Image (cartoon, rainbow, N blue to C red; front, side, top):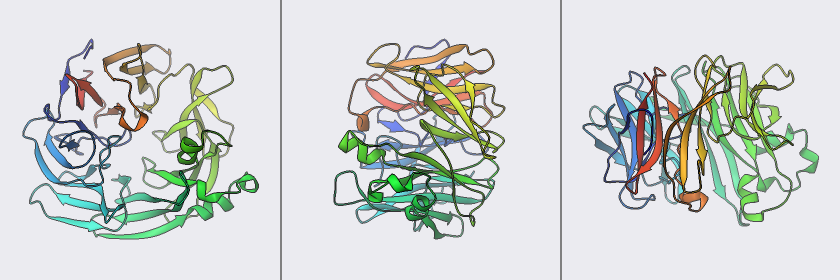
Length: 360
């Protein structure tokens, strides 16, 4: 691990571990604890969800994670300072959420898999995607709203509603090849977006038209409306008024592009913004991202851009052995609650884990 800063492994150094995703802070709301997924062997089940102190001390398991994967564990995240939640399965499908008290260990299930909890709304969102008969096809895909404190869930909509509102719907002759993912609350908890796409199918087919669309719902009761096509890995702006994503244009350069909810033309936030999982800080002045195969194949790096100047600082570089996409270490860098620390998945001494670098 190379860095101009002090980098600390905050997960179990003897086990492969990952945190949830680049839009899920592993810190508790008060910044005192972290949550992550630890695997018993290779980065596949069996696994368990762990909580620990902010510096990694006093780790302890809070529940088994039968539906964990190498990419994001089980989407483990905080509900409040004493409660965590993560996606689980019933039978052979990832189709429910486990809610756990870290105080007394009490747990209960909710009938939908969590993707993101919003402290502003007090509710969670998630989607289901079950494999169809054809490789890459999806039998059904639905979005659910959950109250992970009260224990209820309800269906909001399915992909048929998104197809009906898509400007290219007449060209989509196989709706079963598209599905819904990344149900993400806006910071204000008033609205959310989801992604409607056929990437899973294209991973199998390798060719064909590409659909990758963002839909926004103004609240949990509103019908989702088409916003735009996008490049990859969309996120909300800090004031909840726009969605940004990475977009590579004809020049071959990747820019960070914002789409306002009012329908105005997209604008470029940062040119030459290379990276995969990119997040702006709360005031939009710094962009955090990860660089795969950088500075060379077999390595990955965490980078911090100054949005105004475009300058880039490499926070850390580590081993990332070339492997299939599903087995690759996805760094998923994420800001701490106070914006003074960065968490990321990395690798040292051949063991994948959750690391932290303090910026101040």
